[in-house]
Amino acid sequence: MCGEGAETTSHLFCICRVAWLVWSKCYEWVSLASTIHHEPKMHFSQFRMIEESEFVNQIWLCVYSIIGELWKQKNKKMFRNENVDHLEIFTMEQLNVWSSVTVKVRLTCFSYSDWCLWSVVYMRSIKINKDMWVTKQR
Image (cartoon, rainbow, N blue to C red; front, side, top):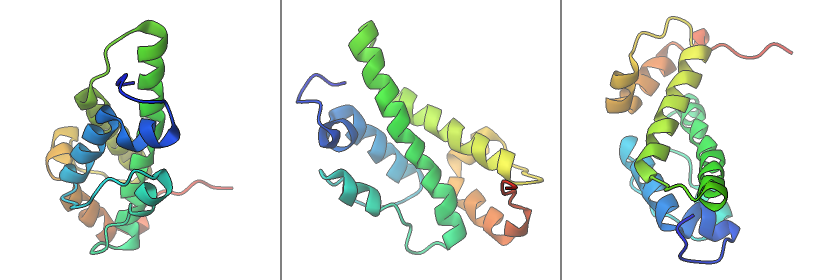
């Protein structure tokens, strides 16, 4: 994706300059101070906001969709020779998480722009009303 290393799992999802910038923006977005591990298993195991409830952490885990987006961007670069922009990836992930939350939570009353600015505040407000969380029926 960045053309700076072998396309290993570690490189693509953790070490790559583009991936590192995307993860850094995500951590900044939710006010999470962390390091980005070079080993994917360690990197993804740290996706818990310790001071937050399990419910807030469930919402935050929506960022796992970044893995798919990084893969898509790698293919975009490889097969179409298009530029990869970490801000575009991050912005798409904000939109994906917001869309997921607004579909799963009844009576969601915050806009996409508010979500982008104060995501943790809204995650906490949803936590209070978690009985409004819509789960899939099996």
